Image 1 (cartoon, one colour):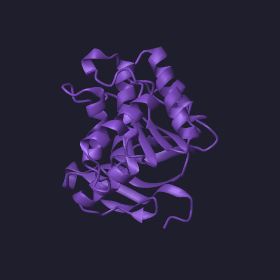
Image 2 (cartoon, rainbow, N blue to C red; image 1 turned 135 degrees about the vertical axis):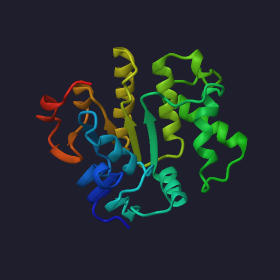
Image 3 (cartoon, rainbow, N blue to C red; image 1 turned 180 degrees about the horizontal axis):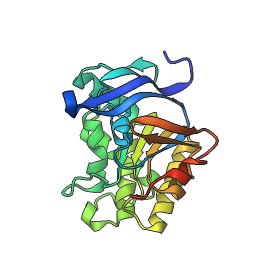
Image 4 (cartoon, rainbow, N blue to C red; image 1 turned 90 degrees about the vertical axis):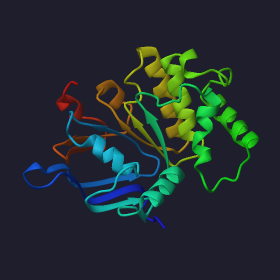
Length: 245
């Protein structure tokens, strides 16, 4: 059981690719702690290791070395099947490109994680009802049968957030959630993330945008596979050093 209040905790986390002279250390000894209910931004230039870090935190990849505790459980060396189970149980994902299936309605896109949740024994009607509730929670109760190409970018990202929430995860990992959106849609998506945070969800968000990172309680700067700074009192100097895309 996790007794220290951390929902994410890593120790000397490393991830290498290749071998010999071609070895790349994408992560190099990362120590990171995120308390339950925090709102954290992760920033860094291209090639800094932040995407690799997010993949490991999201149980999409395993570290080469080091430890990763997710809600107190060491998931560092779990099998792919065990990682998938932990991921589906604990984590909801929001991607820059939405990752919606184009031929499915909003409701059917939102239902998808329920199909992979072995702990939920629901029939099709129950899954559909839960999807409707999730869509209503993000202001899309009137778009349940619309396909992605019938919705704006902001609406598609709302569908993606509803999908991320359907299994009631303790953590939402958001990878450039406003990267493809106009200013007004970005404001609406950040308002939704703030609402989730206020309800107790832990948010870890990758962003290149200083104004978006400023929404977080804390900004972590990653560079050359290491944590360069950790602004526990807000983004601070991290934003001053952030490089453009």
